[in-house]
Figure 1 (tube, rainbow, N blue to C red):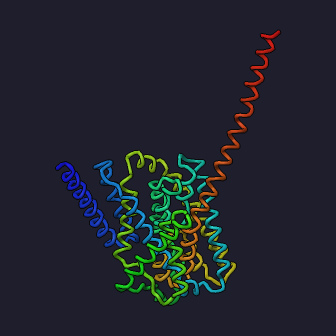
Figure 2: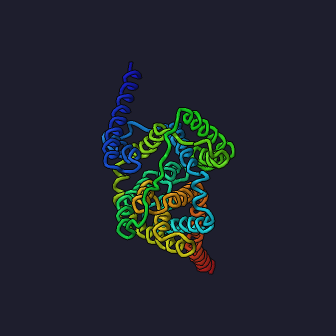
Figure 3: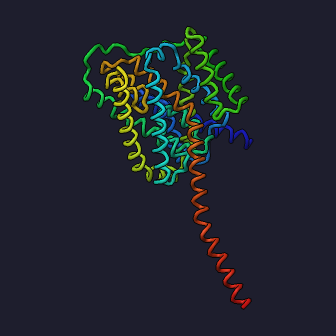
Length: 384
Protein backbone atom coordinates (compact mmCIF):
# COMPACT_ATOMS: atom_id res chain seq x y z
CA UNK A 1 0.00 0.00 0.00
CA UNK A 2 2.76 2.44 0.98
CA UNK A 3 4.76 1.55 -2.14
CA UNK A 4 1.73 2.20 -4.36
CA UNK A 5 1.09 5.53 -2.66
CA UNK A 6 4.71 6.58 -3.13
CA UNK A 7 4.61 5.51 -6.77
CA UNK A 8 1.41 7.51 -7.29
CA UNK A 9 2.96 10.59 -5.64
CA UNK A 10 6.05 10.24 -7.81
CA UNK A 11 3.95 9.90 -10.97
CA UNK A 12 1.92 12.95 -9.94
CA UNK A 13 5.11 14.93 -9.38
CA UNK A 14 6.37 14.04 -12.85
CA UNK A 15 3.03 15.11 -14.34
CA UNK A 16 3.35 18.48 -12.59
CA UNK A 17 6.90 18.92 -13.89
CA UNK A 18 5.85 17.87 -17.41
CA UNK A 19 2.93 20.29 -17.39
CA UNK A 20 5.14 23.11 -16.15
CA UNK A 21 7.74 22.36 -18.81
CA UNK A 22 5.14 22.27 -21.58
CA UNK A 23 3.51 25.50 -20.41
CA UNK A 24 6.83 27.33 -20.24
CA UNK A 25 7.81 25.92 -23.64
CA UNK A 26 4.62 27.20 -25.29
CA UNK A 27 5.21 30.68 -23.91
CA UNK A 28 8.89 30.79 -24.92
CA UNK A 29 8.20 29.30 -28.35
CA UNK A 30 5.50 31.93 -28.93
CA UNK A 31 8.07 34.60 -28.08
CA UNK A 32 10.46 33.09 -30.63
CA UNK A 33 13.13 32.08 -28.11
CA UNK A 34 15.63 29.61 -29.65
CA UNK A 35 16.11 26.31 -27.82
CA UNK A 36 12.87 27.08 -25.99
CA UNK A 37 12.47 23.54 -24.65
CA UNK A 38 15.82 23.59 -22.84
CA UNK A 39 15.08 26.92 -21.15
CA UNK A 40 11.55 25.74 -20.29
CA UNK A 41 12.70 22.45 -18.77
CA UNK A 42 15.51 24.15 -16.87
CA UNK A 43 13.10 26.70 -15.40
CA UNK A 44 10.46 24.07 -14.54
CA UNK A 45 13.08 21.84 -12.94
CA UNK A 46 14.48 24.65 -10.80
CA UNK A 47 10.98 25.73 -9.71
CA UNK A 48 10.03 22.20 -8.68
CA UNK A 49 13.38 21.65 -6.93
CA UNK A 50 12.76 24.74 -4.84
CA UNK A 51 9.20 23.72 -4.00
CA UNK A 52 9.94 20.03 -3.37
CA UNK A 53 13.69 19.51 -2.81
CA UNK A 54 15.09 15.97 -3.24
CA UNK A 55 11.82 14.64 -4.66
CA UNK A 56 12.72 13.96 -8.30
CA UNK A 57 15.83 13.24 -10.34
CA UNK A 58 16.34 12.20 -13.95
CA UNK A 59 17.83 8.69 -14.03
CA UNK A 60 21.24 7.94 -15.51
CA UNK A 61 19.75 5.88 -18.35
CA UNK A 62 17.29 8.60 -19.28
CA UNK A 63 20.10 11.14 -19.22
CA UNK A 64 22.21 8.86 -21.42
CA UNK A 65 19.37 8.46 -23.93
CA UNK A 66 19.00 12.24 -24.13
CA UNK A 67 22.73 12.66 -24.72
CA UNK A 68 22.71 9.99 -27.43
CA UNK A 69 19.86 11.70 -29.29
CA UNK A 70 21.63 15.05 -29.06
CA UNK A 71 24.80 13.41 -30.35
CA UNK A 72 22.92 12.19 -33.42
CA UNK A 73 21.44 15.65 -34.01
CA UNK A 74 24.88 17.28 -33.81
CA UNK A 75 26.43 14.67 -36.08
CA UNK A 76 23.72 15.30 -38.68
CA UNK A 77 25.14 18.80 -39.21
CA UNK A 78 28.17 17.20 -40.87
CA UNK A 79 27.08 16.99 -44.48
CA UNK A 80 28.60 17.61 -47.87
CA UNK A 81 26.63 20.80 -48.53
CA UNK A 82 27.65 22.47 -45.26
CA UNK A 83 31.31 21.50 -45.66
CA UNK A 84 31.18 22.34 -49.38
CA UNK A 85 30.09 25.89 -48.57
CA UNK A 86 33.35 26.37 -46.66
CA UNK A 87 35.22 25.22 -49.77
CA UNK A 88 38.88 26.14 -50.08
CA UNK A 89 38.79 28.20 -46.89
CA UNK A 90 38.69 25.09 -44.66
CA UNK A 91 42.21 25.60 -43.27
CA UNK A 92 41.54 29.20 -42.21
CA UNK A 93 38.21 28.15 -40.70
CA UNK A 94 39.84 25.34 -38.70
CA UNK A 95 42.62 27.63 -37.46
CA UNK A 96 40.09 30.21 -36.31
CA UNK A 97 38.01 27.49 -34.65
CA UNK A 98 40.99 26.09 -32.76
CA UNK A 99 41.95 29.67 -31.85
CA UNK A 100 38.50 30.18 -30.34
CA UNK A 101 38.88 26.98 -28.30
CA UNK A 102 42.29 28.06 -26.98
CA UNK A 103 40.98 31.52 -26.08
CA UNK A 104 37.98 30.02 -24.27
CA UNK A 105 40.23 27.70 -22.26
CA UNK A 106 42.41 30.67 -21.26
CA UNK A 107 39.30 32.56 -20.18
CA UNK A 108 38.20 29.50 -18.22
CA UNK A 109 41.54 29.36 -16.41
CA UNK A 110 41.23 33.04 -15.45
CA UNK A 111 37.67 32.39 -14.26
CA UNK A 112 38.85 29.51 -12.10
CA UNK A 113 41.47 31.71 -10.47
CA UNK A 114 39.10 34.62 -9.92
CA UNK A 115 36.09 32.68 -8.60
CA UNK A 116 35.14 29.69 -6.47
CA UNK A 117 34.53 27.43 -9.49
CA UNK A 118 36.76 24.41 -9.99
CA UNK A 119 38.82 24.15 -13.16
CA UNK A 120 36.50 21.77 -15.02
CA UNK A 121 33.42 23.90 -14.30
CA UNK A 122 35.11 27.16 -15.31
CA UNK A 123 36.62 25.84 -18.56
CA UNK A 124 33.47 23.97 -19.63
CA UNK A 125 31.38 27.05 -18.91
CA UNK A 126 33.63 29.12 -21.17
CA UNK A 127 33.62 26.75 -24.19
CA UNK A 128 31.85 28.73 -26.96
CA UNK A 129 29.53 26.31 -28.68
CA UNK A 130 27.36 23.21 -28.42
CA UNK A 131 25.84 24.32 -25.11
CA UNK A 132 23.55 21.32 -24.82
CA UNK A 133 26.39 18.87 -25.44
CA UNK A 134 28.76 20.67 -23.06
CA UNK A 135 26.19 20.70 -20.26
CA UNK A 136 25.31 17.05 -20.87
CA UNK A 137 28.92 15.89 -20.45
CA UNK A 138 29.89 18.32 -17.65
CA UNK A 139 29.22 16.00 -14.71
CA UNK A 140 31.22 13.15 -16.23
CA UNK A 141 34.21 15.49 -16.73
CA UNK A 142 34.21 16.59 -13.09
CA UNK A 143 32.34 19.88 -13.49
CA UNK A 144 29.27 21.18 -11.69
CA UNK A 145 26.75 20.90 -14.51
CA UNK A 146 24.40 23.35 -12.80
CA UNK A 147 26.97 26.16 -12.92
CA UNK A 148 28.11 25.04 -16.38
CA UNK A 149 24.50 25.31 -17.54
CA UNK A 150 24.21 28.77 -15.98
CA UNK A 151 27.39 29.91 -17.76
CA UNK A 152 26.49 28.37 -21.12
CA UNK A 153 22.88 29.57 -21.27
CA UNK A 154 23.86 33.04 -20.04
CA UNK A 155 26.11 33.17 -23.12
CA UNK A 156 23.28 31.96 -25.36
CA UNK A 157 20.89 34.53 -23.86
CA UNK A 158 23.32 37.44 -24.34
CA UNK A 159 24.03 36.41 -27.94
CA UNK A 160 20.29 36.04 -28.53
CA UNK A 161 19.80 39.64 -27.40
CA UNK A 162 22.72 41.36 -29.14
CA UNK A 163 23.51 39.45 -32.34
CA UNK A 164 20.43 40.29 -34.46
CA UNK A 165 20.60 43.97 -33.48
CA UNK A 166 24.37 44.21 -33.93
CA UNK A 167 24.28 42.51 -37.33
CA UNK A 168 21.36 44.63 -38.56
CA UNK A 169 22.85 47.93 -37.37
CA UNK A 170 26.45 47.34 -38.40
CA UNK A 171 25.71 45.42 -41.61
CA UNK A 172 22.42 46.55 -43.22
CA UNK A 173 21.12 44.11 -45.83
CA UNK A 174 22.68 44.92 -49.18
CA UNK A 175 21.68 41.93 -51.28
CA UNK A 176 19.17 39.13 -51.54
CA UNK A 177 18.36 37.70 -48.12
CA UNK A 178 16.43 34.68 -49.26
CA UNK A 179 19.02 32.00 -48.68
CA UNK A 180 17.76 30.75 -45.37
CA UNK A 181 18.42 27.17 -44.45
CA UNK A 182 15.22 25.15 -44.43
CA UNK A 183 15.28 21.79 -42.76
CA UNK A 184 13.33 18.96 -44.29
CA UNK A 185 10.66 17.29 -42.21
CA UNK A 186 11.86 13.79 -41.28
CA UNK A 187 9.70 10.83 -42.27
CA UNK A 188 8.91 7.72 -40.25
CA UNK A 189 12.16 6.06 -41.33
CA UNK A 190 14.03 8.84 -39.50
CA UNK A 191 12.84 7.37 -36.19
CA UNK A 192 14.41 3.98 -36.85
CA UNK A 193 17.62 5.51 -38.22
CA UNK A 194 17.95 7.90 -35.28
CA UNK A 195 17.42 5.17 -32.69
CA UNK A 196 19.86 2.84 -34.49
CA UNK A 197 22.60 5.50 -34.70
CA UNK A 198 22.06 6.54 -31.07
CA UNK A 199 22.21 2.97 -29.74
CA UNK A 200 25.11 1.82 -31.94
CA UNK A 201 27.12 4.98 -31.28
CA UNK A 202 26.58 4.74 -27.53
CA UNK A 203 27.67 1.08 -27.44
CA UNK A 204 30.69 1.76 -29.67
CA UNK A 205 31.70 4.74 -27.53
CA UNK A 206 31.56 2.62 -24.38
CA UNK A 207 33.48 -0.22 -26.06
CA UNK A 208 36.43 2.05 -26.93
CA UNK A 209 36.12 3.93 -23.61
CA UNK A 210 35.38 7.26 -25.25
CA UNK A 211 34.89 10.11 -22.76
CA UNK A 212 31.23 11.16 -22.58
CA UNK A 213 30.52 8.05 -24.68
CA UNK A 214 26.74 8.49 -24.71
CA UNK A 215 27.16 11.84 -26.49
CA UNK A 216 30.38 11.58 -28.49
CA UNK A 217 29.81 8.00 -29.70
CA UNK A 218 26.57 8.79 -31.55
CA UNK A 219 28.01 12.12 -32.71
CA UNK A 220 31.04 10.42 -34.30
CA UNK A 221 29.02 7.59 -35.87
CA UNK A 222 26.41 9.97 -37.29
CA UNK A 223 29.09 12.28 -38.68
CA UNK A 224 30.69 9.36 -40.51
CA UNK A 225 27.32 8.14 -41.79
CA UNK A 226 26.40 11.64 -43.01
CA UNK A 227 29.60 11.92 -45.02
CA UNK A 228 29.53 8.37 -46.41
CA UNK A 229 25.83 8.45 -47.28
CA UNK A 230 24.90 12.08 -48.03
CA UNK A 231 21.62 10.99 -49.55
CA UNK A 232 20.42 9.30 -46.38
CA UNK A 233 18.96 12.56 -45.09
CA UNK A 234 19.76 11.91 -41.43
CA UNK A 235 17.56 14.07 -39.23
CA UNK A 236 16.35 13.51 -35.67
CA UNK A 237 12.53 13.69 -35.52
CA UNK A 238 11.51 16.93 -33.75
CA UNK A 239 9.56 15.05 -31.07
CA UNK A 240 12.63 13.00 -30.08
CA UNK A 241 14.89 16.04 -30.17
CA UNK A 242 12.56 18.13 -28.00
CA UNK A 243 12.28 15.19 -25.58
CA UNK A 244 16.07 15.03 -25.36
CA UNK A 245 16.28 18.77 -24.73
CA UNK A 246 13.62 18.47 -22.02
CA UNK A 247 15.49 15.64 -20.27
CA UNK A 248 18.77 17.58 -20.32
CA UNK A 249 17.08 20.69 -18.94
CA UNK A 250 15.28 18.74 -16.21
CA UNK A 251 18.40 16.73 -15.35
CA UNK A 252 20.18 19.98 -14.51
CA UNK A 253 17.24 21.98 -13.17
CA UNK A 254 15.96 19.39 -10.70
CA UNK A 255 19.34 19.31 -8.94
CA UNK A 256 19.46 23.06 -8.38
CA UNK A 257 19.40 24.20 -4.77
CA UNK A 258 19.09 27.60 -3.17
CA UNK A 259 22.84 27.44 -2.51
CA UNK A 260 23.49 26.86 -6.21
CA UNK A 261 21.42 29.92 -7.11
CA UNK A 262 23.33 32.01 -4.58
CA UNK A 263 26.62 30.78 -6.07
CA UNK A 264 25.41 31.57 -9.59
CA UNK A 265 24.34 35.06 -8.55
CA UNK A 266 27.72 35.67 -6.94
CA UNK A 267 29.43 34.57 -10.17
CA UNK A 268 27.30 36.73 -12.47
CA UNK A 269 29.68 39.71 -12.69
CA UNK A 270 32.73 37.55 -13.36
CA UNK A 271 30.82 35.55 -15.99
CA UNK A 272 29.66 38.70 -17.78
CA UNK A 273 33.24 40.04 -17.85
CA UNK A 274 34.44 36.69 -19.22
CA UNK A 275 31.66 36.74 -21.82
CA UNK A 276 32.65 40.25 -22.92
CA UNK A 277 36.23 39.04 -23.35
CA UNK A 278 34.98 36.07 -25.37
CA UNK A 279 32.88 38.29 -27.64
CA UNK A 280 35.78 40.69 -28.24
CA UNK A 281 38.18 37.85 -29.00
CA UNK A 282 35.61 36.33 -31.38
CA UNK A 283 35.37 39.64 -33.25
CA UNK A 284 39.17 39.74 -33.47
CA UNK A 285 39.08 36.26 -34.98
CA UNK A 286 36.39 37.45 -37.40
CA UNK A 287 38.66 40.28 -38.52
CA UNK A 288 41.50 37.80 -39.04
CA UNK A 289 39.25 35.43 -41.01
CA UNK A 290 37.98 38.25 -43.23
CA UNK A 291 41.55 39.42 -43.86
CA UNK A 292 42.85 35.94 -44.70
CA UNK A 293 39.96 34.82 -46.95
CA UNK A 294 37.54 36.31 -49.50
CA UNK A 295 34.79 36.21 -46.87
CA UNK A 296 33.09 39.51 -46.09
CA UNK A 297 33.32 40.91 -42.57
CA UNK A 298 29.60 40.26 -42.12
CA UNK A 299 30.00 36.59 -43.04
CA UNK A 300 33.07 36.13 -40.85
CA UNK A 301 31.44 37.98 -37.93
CA UNK A 302 28.36 35.75 -37.98
CA UNK A 303 30.44 32.64 -38.64
CA UNK A 304 32.64 33.23 -35.57
CA UNK A 305 29.88 34.39 -33.20
CA UNK A 306 30.35 32.14 -30.14
CA UNK A 307 27.08 30.28 -30.06
CA UNK A 308 23.40 30.79 -30.70
CA UNK A 309 23.32 28.66 -33.86
CA UNK A 310 19.69 29.33 -34.76
CA UNK A 311 19.97 33.03 -33.92
CA UNK A 312 23.05 33.37 -36.12
CA UNK A 313 21.36 31.52 -39.00
CA UNK A 314 18.33 33.82 -38.76
CA UNK A 315 20.55 36.92 -38.60
CA UNK A 316 22.47 35.72 -41.65
CA UNK A 317 19.24 35.38 -43.61
CA UNK A 318 17.86 38.73 -42.45
CA UNK A 319 21.03 40.70 -43.27
CA UNK A 320 21.68 39.05 -46.63
CA UNK A 321 24.81 37.22 -45.54
CA UNK A 322 25.95 33.99 -47.18
CA UNK A 323 23.76 31.77 -45.02
CA UNK A 324 25.15 28.47 -46.31
CA UNK A 325 28.71 29.60 -45.55
CA UNK A 326 27.80 30.91 -42.09
CA UNK A 327 25.95 27.69 -41.21
CA UNK A 328 28.84 25.59 -42.53
CA UNK A 329 31.44 27.40 -40.40
CA UNK A 330 29.16 27.37 -37.34
CA UNK A 331 28.59 23.62 -37.79
CA UNK A 332 32.34 22.98 -37.86
CA UNK A 333 32.87 25.20 -34.80
CA UNK A 334 30.11 23.49 -32.82
CA UNK A 335 31.35 19.99 -33.63
CA UNK A 336 34.98 20.83 -32.87
CA UNK A 337 34.02 22.37 -29.53
CA UNK A 338 31.90 19.41 -28.42
CA UNK A 339 34.29 16.75 -29.74
CA UNK A 340 37.50 18.27 -28.34
CA UNK A 341 36.09 19.67 -25.09
CA UNK A 342 36.68 16.49 -23.03
CA UNK A 343 40.34 16.19 -24.07
CA UNK A 344 41.01 19.94 -23.88
CA UNK A 345 39.36 20.33 -20.48
CA UNK A 346 41.14 17.31 -19.00
CA UNK A 347 44.50 18.59 -20.27
CA UNK A 348 43.80 22.05 -18.84
CA UNK A 349 42.67 20.65 -15.49
CA UNK A 350 45.77 18.42 -15.37
CA UNK A 351 48.08 21.38 -16.04
CA UNK A 352 46.38 23.43 -13.33
CA UNK A 353 46.59 20.58 -10.82
CA UNK A 354 50.31 20.08 -11.53
CA UNK A 355 50.87 23.81 -11.16
CA UNK A 356 49.05 23.81 -7.82
CA UNK A 357 51.08 20.78 -6.66
CA UNK A 358 54.36 22.54 -7.53
CA UNK A 359 53.15 25.64 -5.68
CA UNK A 360 52.39 23.54 -2.58
CA UNK A 361 55.84 21.96 -2.79
CA UNK A 362 57.49 25.38 -2.98
CA UNK A 363 55.55 26.50 0.09
CA UNK A 364 56.15 23.32 2.10
CA UNK A 365 59.90 23.08 1.39
CA UNK A 366 60.93 26.19 3.38
CA UNK A 367 58.58 25.17 6.21
CA UNK A 368 60.20 21.73 6.34
CA UNK A 369 63.64 23.34 6.33
CA UNK A 370 62.74 25.63 9.22
CA UNK A 371 61.29 22.73 11.20
CA UNK A 372 64.45 20.67 10.62
CA UNK A 373 66.68 23.53 11.67
CA UNK A 374 64.62 24.03 14.79
CA UNK A 375 64.92 20.36 15.75
CA UNK A 376 68.67 20.42 15.11
CA UNK A 377 69.10 23.55 17.20
CA UNK A 378 67.08 22.03 20.03
CA UNK A 379 69.18 18.89 19.92
CA UNK A 380 72.37 20.94 20.06
CA UNK A 381 71.19 22.86 23.10
CA UNK A 382 70.13 19.72 24.99
CA UNK A 383 73.20 17.83 23.92
CA UNK A 384 75.59 20.69 24.85
